Length: 107
Image 1 (cartoon, rainbow, N blue to C red):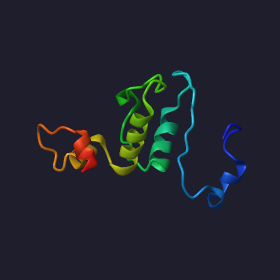
Image 2: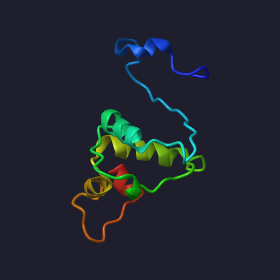
Image 3: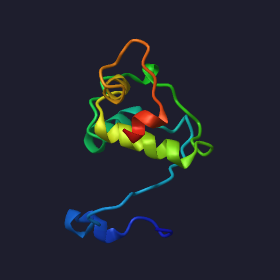
């Protein structure tokens, strides 16, 4: 979508039924609007964001993160309430010294 999001997508029925939507957003730290971002996280990410601006660790760029790591993060965010829940589920019970391995993902 080199020209942006199609205007037809304003109607839910006009949106594609499947696929991955990727976008880039550039904003100065001085221009960010925490309450708006938190609202988007709750509305579109379906996460309960009971957090304040001071508790957030802001990152400047994800450009150097490998695509497979981003895909895995997208999966975790859409399937688990928080990171601990994801780890507990992926390690099947959350043993104290649990580790993740390729073999566990393949199982």
